[in-house]
Length: 118
Image 1 (cartoon, rainbow, N blue to C red):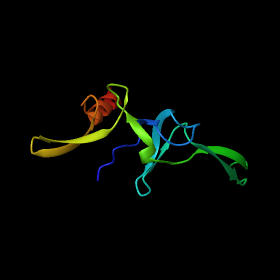
Image 2 (cartoon, one colour):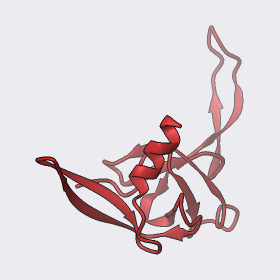
Image 3 (spheres, rainbow, N blue to C red):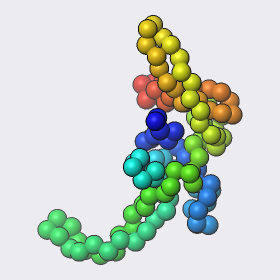
Image 4 (cartoon, rainbow, N blue to C red):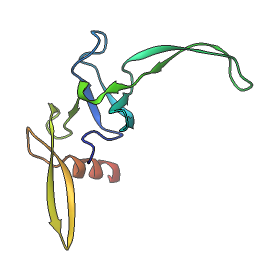
């Protein structure tokens, strides 16, 4: 099954800890086996590290994974949190599956392709 949230998407946290609710950030990593995502600047936890040859030890804050159901994709077109749908389009003997914003109906994947190229 295709993922509704991918690496590089901007998402907003809709459920969870009070400190995280309402925050937005980019998806750093998607963990499909556990249905979780790591969002930049959200859900910090303290990790105790032993000193190693290349780094000091100490207490470091890192982003922890959040369940996918607790985040919503922010549409790049309408800039609103939205659900994600899929549209199957046939182009020159090739069938393609695109993610679509449920609010404005625009193609999410094409917008991200255009912003990456331009």
